[in-house]
Amino acid sequence: MTKILLPTNGSENAHKAGEYAISESALGADIIILYVIDTDYLDALSQEDLKEKLRMKLRKEGEEVINNYKTRIEDSQCQGYCKNVNLITAIKEGNIAEVIIKTIEEENIDQVIIGKSNKSSLETYLLENITKKVAKTAKIPVKVIS
Image (tube, rainbow, N blue to C red; front, side, top):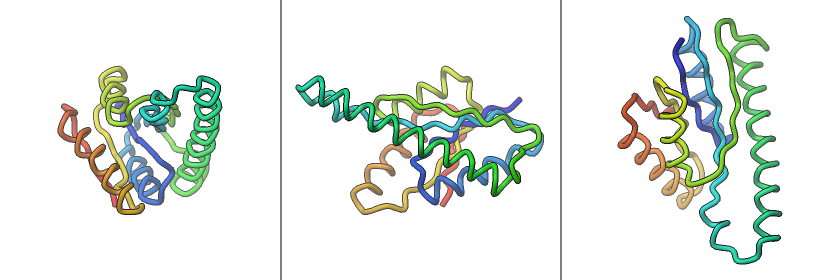
């Protein structure tokens, strides 16, 4: 069975990437919906209690994003049921690009489908750098959907 990695930040283009992933999976696939909590800046904080509070808040936000994202994909693309498609959710922490690349290797992913950023110019710059790093480093196809 094909394994697709679907990183998400909950954006509209990420949703379009999810719809595309479902359409690519007509014959069946495991789709891993991945939300990465970028902890690079957390590690710079010296106050452990503040770090932990922020980590918990970011994890809760991640759970909401990923659950809403999964439900939206199922409802819009599958009417609540995707035949031959197994949607798996995962929340991980670390450098976003590095976590995506590591997940590709650990899960034996066949392709990555990712939404192009539609955020502010700074966020667009950062997300485009993540996408470029993943596309350059991954040894599998990376499709960017906008």
